[in-house]
Image 1 (cartoon, rainbow, N blue to C red):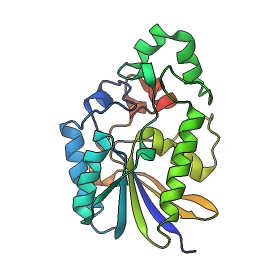
Image 2 (tube, rainbow, N blue to C red; image 1 turned 90 degrees about the vertical axis):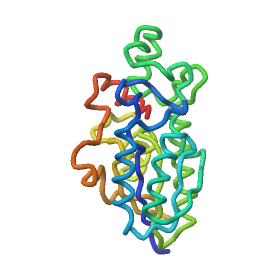
Image 3 (spheres, rainbow, N blue to C red; image 1 turned 180 degrees about the vertical axis):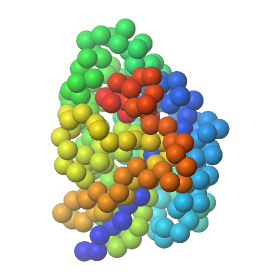
Image 4 (tube, rainbow, N blue to C red; image 1 turned 30 degrees about the horizontal axis):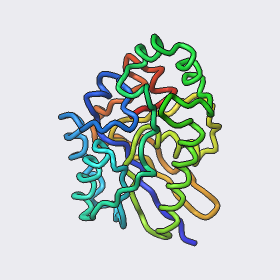
Length: 224
């Protein structure tokens, strides 16, 4: 089987990225910077030879994917399996607010407890399994082709771990920049990492939440 080439793209910046506020599955639009980043993505992917574009149905990812679709001349296919992790009661709050309101829960979150479930949310293990299953299903449908996934920071983190076999509880040491392009290959044997966090099309302006004031929230939740 010929490998499937995948461009895994994180959505552009939102106001809540700037505020370091957990978005989860709340529907937050791109801000002005995010829309500019999406336009840069449109030009960057124009000559990638994409066969299909799959996107999270959440607005910030879908708006980014619309720009990717314009650059590639392709329609979008929404897939809820590409949604960000559901964070329940954590959504809409900063890491500092979460730590103050739920100190024990925030500690389990920071330690990447795979079975911890925020009230009304989903566990890291369930989220990872959802991302892995979705990515495998979509990639397997396009042998020998190049496709794009437009999704969220948490999804990108899961794909990195899936391709590199890094343990789910290992601390993150890789970037998850807004509007970054990450490259993977898929065969029936699994995923392989080809390139990560390409932001040349942004001239160095992509925001990675590890550089924000609430860096711990990004490290444990990637709630973008």
